[in-house]
Image 1 (cartoon, rainbow, N blue to C red):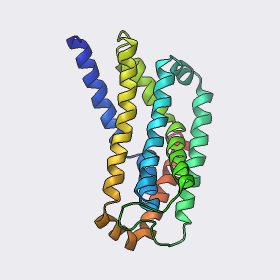
Image 2: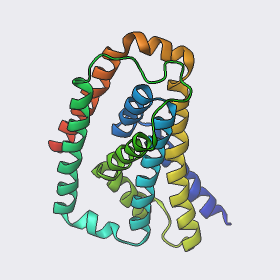
Image 3: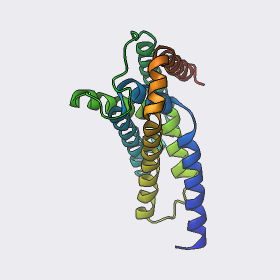
Length: 211
């Protein structure tokens, strides 16, 4: 591996980490899932977000990013679908009844396979329908990553980006579901859920308005 490739990969890693940890719909979704349903659901949501990132990386690697970048209607359709989805999820949080949290001590929850799958689906859809995530991958693989890199190295970049998503959001989930934090959340659950719901609605409206 030459110095040029090492420098390129270092830039990719820095850009990826900065993008992943930046607050956005994915972060709000993780907070909603982990604090509302517990650690297992939060990790499932993190995995869903990671799988969404994997899909973005796959079509960017295959050159399909050209379609996304040069056909505005594709981005517009995804943008409006994502906006509706985020507003719907945010509305559900805003209208949630004040009940006890599923796991106030942050450990295992009693949720079944169905709820885990739903949490995964919510994370996946949140990421896959975010046009900014799509543009990030298109720009990453067309402007930042050296096109002359071997295919295996490009695939490694895609895997790193997906793994970075999962690792960061899994860490966030484990932190949010710590017993001490969950005890505080149990007291302030209604306010926190409504705050997260308002953030999701705001992200949705921003998407719809092209922000």
